[in-house]
Image 1 (cartoon, rainbow, N blue to C red):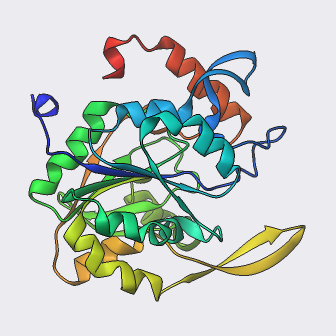
Image 2: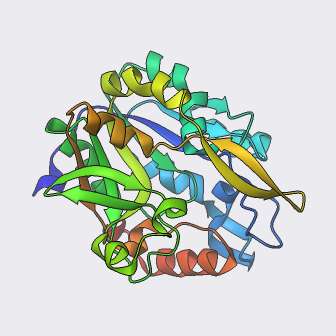
Length: 275
């Protein structure tokens, strides 16, 4: 089976800088939340970041940090990681740009970009993502939930992704057009290093204006989206593919209810099913 095939050593970049403003009652780093709860959902063992690191394929790994960075660095000091600070929380693209030296200098030809609050992705799913780089320059990990919430949506053509449309744009589409976009973006990607490096300057020069509530006031801020890379590559005729996984495998910990659900799912997994 495909997921049993070995893949080349692959670099991994974990985006773990965010604050988690919807996590009421918790001020720590979401990536250090426990998968095994003890005294409370916020206290326990098996931090999310450790699960992610252990499930990623062999290769150099880096973490993008900001909020509670000292805690993240201390908790993961046994993993031989490099850390890159995202000084301003300016989107997933901003996180990638903050770690551009890691991308450039690490020796692997393939890179996984993953989220620091999505702990249940299986090793074989990461391998499948990388395996599809044999015929694509970039591969998006998607899923098909019952409720698309505020996820980015994939505009596909056969096995190719033409564009990822962020919620701030697709929310204004008529219902028929929204319903035609069925696959959601998990925020997890595999990409060829040489291709990615060619597009970082273009990404850095094209910010989006996003209205956010900061200190109780609505403020327009500049953000950069990793998803823009898909459109840039497609416009140049480069192939961008996708693979899908089950919604539960790609669940992030955005709020307390999500933390409880992820902890429940982790508890139900047998050691064999985690692979």
